[in-house]
Length: 172
Image 1 (cartoon, rainbow, N blue to C red):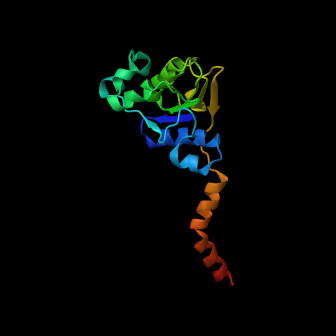
Image 2: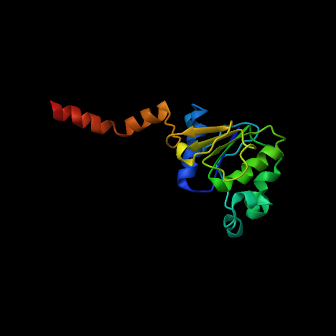
Image 3: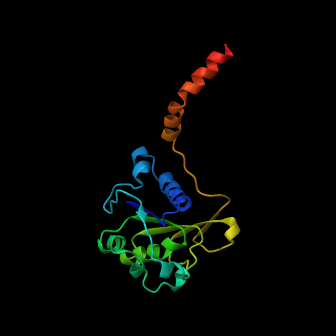
């Protein structure tokens, strides 16, 4: 199973879903942002730490669960962890590290963008080259991760099929 986490910012969620989407060809999976498995989640995990924590650098968050509202904190009390955690944005970094710890190191933790905290705890960090961070677990990218599946291309092509028909008629 895959848990996709973001702080709710559209750009961060889009990047984490792109990486997760590249791991699966299932069109239905892309719509609900998970691959069904033991750690099943029907929606992306959105984390919204409270203001006091968000004002601090993430490497200073001594108790990241206390930063979350009770309903979000409950996600970390289930005991069933994902196979893969993909977080994007610095505010998800403490929770990726926490999932790694709670799963006994079994969850593969990937982080997109500079986590602004200890990096060795992540299995993979996907970050733009301009962040200029290095490490054995760092995969620098030129641009943002994007994934478009073949079935998405076909579906969108069908949405605009009438435009193709009108171009053919005007060419005659």
